[in-house]
Each structure stands twice: as C-alpha cells, then as structure tokens.
Image 1 (cartoon, one colour):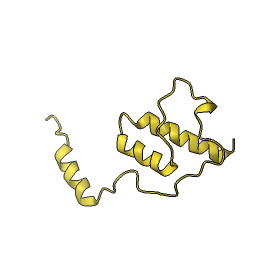
Image 2: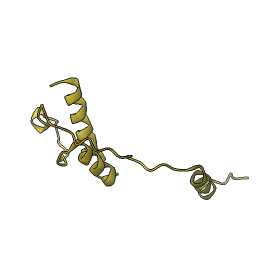
Image 3: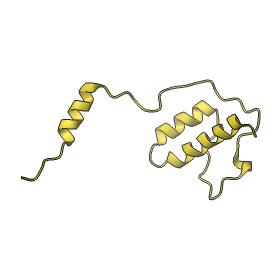
Length: 85
C-alpha cells in the first residue's frame, strides 16, 4: 500500500471513529472518499482498507462551517463565566 493509500484509509477510519459525535462530518468525509461507511473495528485490518486504485470522488466541501466574528462575540458573551467575587 502506498503512503497516499494508507493516509486515505486513516481518514476513512477517522470518519468511523467520529461518527457518534460528528455524524454529518463523518458522512462528508465518506462522500469525499467515495466510500461506504466503515464500522468501527476492534482491530484495523488491511482487509478493511480501500483497495489500491480506489478513486476518490474529487468532491470537496468544508467539514466545519466558518464562524464569523459576530457569532464569536455573541457566543463569548452568552457563554462567558462570571468570576466569584
């Protein structure tokens, strides 16, 4: 397996691992890889890997939305802790 193939399979494994927490991000990664979701394995075997020559979709999108400065300030003011005096 080439380094690129190994890296792509690690991304696929990462997508499986984050699915319980970030399902939409996991789905985006699988779409970009043009791969079926991988069940979280107990042990990652090479048989779970995408085959050499697998063609990724070429489709890309942002994994996480851009947060503008106004939203940062709004969240900062809403979530700011209060010091005990």
